[in-house]
Image (spheres, rainbow, N blue to C red):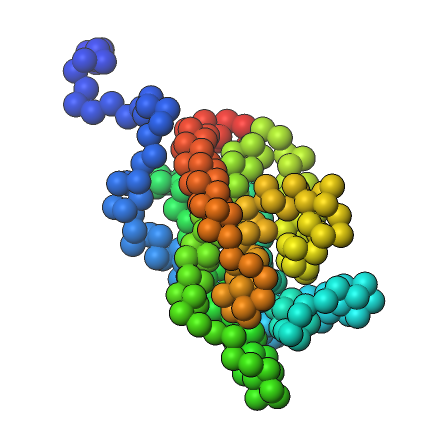
Length: 289
């Protein structure tokens, strides 16, 4: 006996991708917030579960980087850090930079790394990179302990207390770095589904970007010594965040409200563009990964 053929109009529900190009899908992300927290918990528990030192790696990496910068850039190259000890100067930039770089590198491979789970079950894909950004807050908190420890030590050795009410701006800088890393990571992750070579360029690109983001030197130094290249720093929003971070924590450098406004606008533009591209890519990436 032949079964009757149903027309498309007889179905109660039809599942199809959304056609609105500018749909941000934020309400759906909120509905899946429990899954987001589950991914964050998973990442925190498992990331260094099989290692000997565990979370201590979060402390070792910025400490050795700061020591290396102090030897090369301050002792050998002779870059001055004012009244602030060189090690503390470098730590203040490295800690906030590490948060951005980790968010960017880990989210830039989202589609490729999670293709298996994306192909089996539905949930808003943006939850994956978002969970990475939230998880890295834990790493940032651990690395800040190093800075606090050395700060207390240098204050006990005679360094003046540099903290003021501007310290309240520091969480705001962290949010900027997180959203900027997330936005750029989503853009790169969407491109990686078609251009696999970008995966190999991300790590190198982040390292190169660090040298033009005033992580190991004051912004004023480039403007003074190499004014012809000063525009590279002035148009780099990351440099303003790092410089502001040092100003807040150590009262060293400058606080540019125009630079922060430019950074906020740039970050919002990159994040929204990355979110739109990411949401569009998730509909068809499984055919190319």
